[in-house]
Image 1 (cartoon, one colour):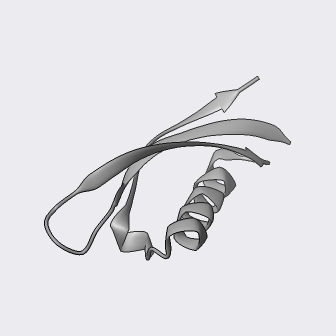
Image 2 (image 1 turned 180 degrees about the vertical axis):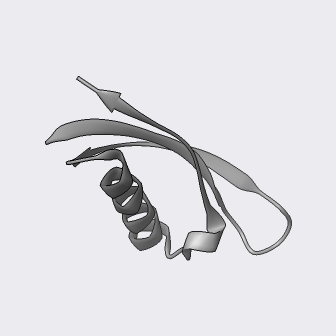
Length: 62
């Protein structure tokens, strides 16, 4: 398993168009699973649906 850095943003707040950036480090077998884990973590931590989360970059970290 390798570590992946996921960078993106999520819609924070119900009024307006406020997007906050985030960076997560996850352990995963591949990039696709790392993205899924990123959605899962952000959704559970902030109560967000996938439509409110934008993942901009995924990088493998050695």
